[in-house]
Length: 277
Image (cartoon, rainbow, N blue to C red; front, side, top):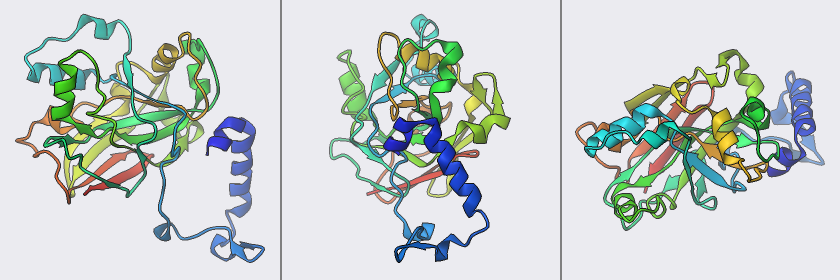
């Protein structure tokens, strides 16, 4: 995928051409030099679409989530939040895929999920204007920004972070969906895609990508200011409204424990599932 993203448009066009030629074939029987070209999906372990991103920035772009979480701490909205989209860097070596197990960190008693959408950069750029930003997006995928809330709370009291509260795991997947597949759901810089989260089969969260206050075009513009973005960089949206236990409250669901199965679903992007161990 990294090579595909680096080469760019011609590589994706070649993949589409291959898909067209194979649509009437039973690919389960096709071989090259005696080796099958495909295996059944149920026999595969899916890595994240970009297993080791060039970098990973996660924004804070859904207003409802920000407002609710601050209200729970007795805080009003920060005026600066409306002035510019903000993000933090997370660990691009801790990426997990669909159906990967997530180890609960030993240092937390408040393990949480976060329902997000992420874009993958497909075209290098610096100082990218908002009007051209969508040209730099290769596609979208589901993102779960796992969080150790007690550790996050302690470190951010110092005025830095989040860091250890977030760096142990981030799930991405199950696949990368290119923008042409979503064009019918786009309205300007936004996409109308329903989002939901389930824990052990029970739905606890729902939202829509179109409720982003800061669009991905604005996030890319901000991230690329005097800084080059590269193919394979991942940019997360931040949590959608109701998209985590911190926001919902433990009366809706307790903190996550080993054995819990978390499923995040975004319309047209699929389902990203992980079990806590």
